[in-house]
Each structure stands twice: as structure tokens, then as C-alpha cells.
Image (cartoon, rainbow, N blue to C red; front, side):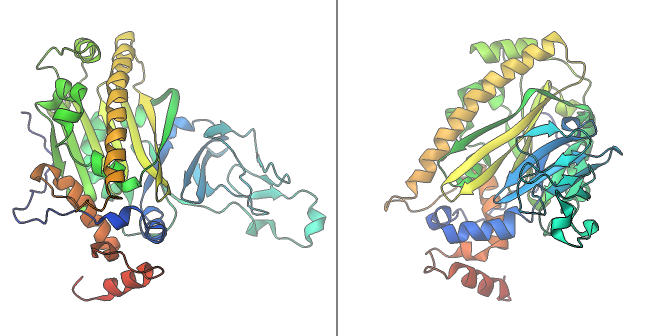
Length: 402
């Protein structure tokens, strides 16, 4: 097995093998708390600089009632704004991505914004009296770029800058030349699943299920797969292919056609997954890069979404390998979706007694611990009475033992 240079936190011998209680997967009140204390205050990935290369190019990102647009100005600078007109709150752009020719025009009443977000003018401006245009530009959103990927945060939170947080990934992202990747023809994908978002993350946060639930991945790299746990909620999961020819059509041909790249030894012939708490994963193979994340829509509905990129100068062999990897990943995603549904629906049963976790599922426990630190109300086995979740959470935060 190849030595992976990123230092991993060892699994403790005395860790609690219980997961979150079932009520945390269904409570609307807790869902509102997760929005406030978790999703809006933690970094999310919206896309890549290559998605917005020309002046006026924009990329949209929605998260739990917040709407963002990332746009490149005439000066070539990337900026992120709330995607809402300062007049009546309409979306100033609609869709996944596009281009504004010289200006942003709100489709509701025609307010016009410059590409840097400043207000150029309101329709029929005399009807607003003495309005100071400088006070009515699009509202900015915190944004950082790391190896070409665009990170947004809607509210201040506990995580440091992206560069500081993801410093352990810097060497590998440099080796993969992620700053140079380009979007594929149809880069964005999305599917809605009738589950709580945590059920999706629970499945993705452990490799214990790979041998039985994912025959394609097991055949490709399951003999070498392992999870590494880093500080600050970061994870790395990696498996190496090529030690066996493969029996299934997609795996057999992928192993045959996967391109060779000038990479460090620990990344050669690797499928590597870099996780960022609470819900972002970068999946990198020799021929392609994608990120994916769970976007909660309601306590019982989650949007699985992401974007995919290719290497510049893609050869026919690399394109074929990317197609074969997509087939393998498509089957894996379908298998994980079904596991998420089964896991989530089990929590409605009176017979469900909670999780009992293997050492190979420590990543799931670590994720739950991260949630409990932010929202200690999740440590309660029984759901608080209606209207009490927020009050109980604040009470537990104030306890000196936490």
C-alpha cells in the first residue's frame, strides 16, 4: 500500500460508537438551527474560475433561502453578491450560469447594475425621490478562491480562511493542477432525494459499506481503499487501481485506458476524495475532477449536486477514461442513494435503537461530533418539546463543561 504523506489523526480506542438520535433527522426546528449555525456559516463551493472566464460571466448558487451570484467584472475581478435586486428582491440573474453583456438588468422592473455590483440606475428614477445610488448596490458575499475553486460563506463562522483551512490539501491540489481545469460540456448535475441531508453524509463518510454495496468500486480499488482523518473536519479517502484487470465492462476498460500522469507516487493510479466539513467533497481521478455537496431543501428533502471538470488538452484516451469513470460513478451514486433512503426511513420505526458503529465508520462519528459541538442539543436522546430546541441548545452551549 502506498504511503500517503498527509498526516492522519488516529482512531481512538475508547470512542463512543453511538451516532445521532433519530429525532435529529426529522425536526423542522433543528433544521432551522442547522441553517443558522452550520450551513450559512461554513464554506461552500460554488464553482471554478473557469466557469466564469469572461467579463459578465456569472455563476449562481442557492443555499437554504440564500441566493448568490458570482460574476467577473469588466476589470477581470471575480465578485460574489446576493442574487437579489435592492428594489423588490427579485433574482437579478436566473439559471445556473450565463453572461451579462455589459450590465445586469433586473427582469422585474429594470434596475440596472454594473458588473462590479454598483447600481447604475433605477427605472424611472424620479419616482424614488432623492435616492443615493451608492447605497443601493448589490450586497456582497464573502468569497475566496483556492486552486481555482470558488468558496462562498453567507455569514461569519468558526472556520478560518479557505487557504488556512485547506492547507493540508495544498500540495496535492497543486500536483493535480486544479487551477487549470476546465468545465465539461454539461458541468452541473443535481438530483433530489427524499431524505434528511445527514443520511446522505452518513453513507458518504465511511468506507465500511464499499465491499458489499459498491461492487464496481470494490473491483476497481476496494482492496486498497482507506479513510484518513485530519484536523478541522477534513478527510481524505483514497483507493488505488491497476493491480487487477477488472471483470465488469466499465472497470475492465477503465483500468485499460486510464491515462498516466506525472504525479507524486501517492497520487498515481489513485481515486482520491478530499472532504470538507460539513458537506463538500472533491473527487479527483487521473482524468477528471468534480466536487459534490448536499444542499438541504427541507428536513426530509435533499438536493445532491456538483460540478465536473476535465484536464486541459484532453486526449481521446482521457475522454474515454472520463466516460468510463462516469459509468462507474453513476452506478455508485445510485447505490448510495438507495442506502441513504433505507437508512433515513429506518429512523421512523419504533424498533430503531440508533447506530452501533465499527472502527471503519469512525468518519461518521467524527462528523456527528462536529455537529454536536456546534449544536449540543443533538446530544439529547429525546427530542425537546416543541419550541424548546433553540432554548435548550443555548443552555447547553453556556454550560462550562461543553
